Length: 191
Image: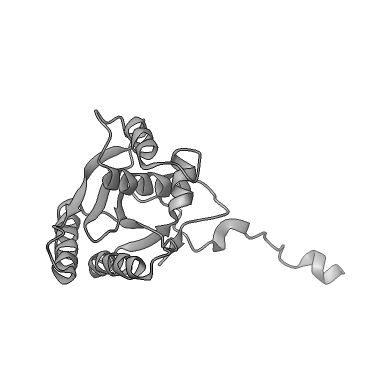
């Protein structure tokens, strides 16, 4: 007992130190809503009093194009966006369970093209489930696209609501900024 009392005092280690997440929030966040014919993207910069929108839009592909051409355009456009805005992290919409296998395969291909472009740039990539994003932005996990667009417009102080796919991408970036800026029990999944 005397040996323990005279020895070095044990120090407490912080409980939250081993989360594996960076405590410094990312400043420029890219959100991506992948789809073969209309991949939405949105880039925000963390700022006060509210985040600033750097870019938003939809990478559109003609229905007449074959899938391989669409996938190439998605990757090419995302590479150009990455070079222009230099985000430090990307948030992509998580997988949903489609009832149609063909639809699920096509969505997976678009998601893969997006992931490849972001991985080439060396970004940290996270995914957030669509229901979680809607819950965070609108307060209801089954919210309609127009409701997400209106809330994104309010949160980013935009003059008009963004296009639906771009709104989802911006909502993903906003959700990540909120989740990354506080301690969360259900942190975004890193992929």
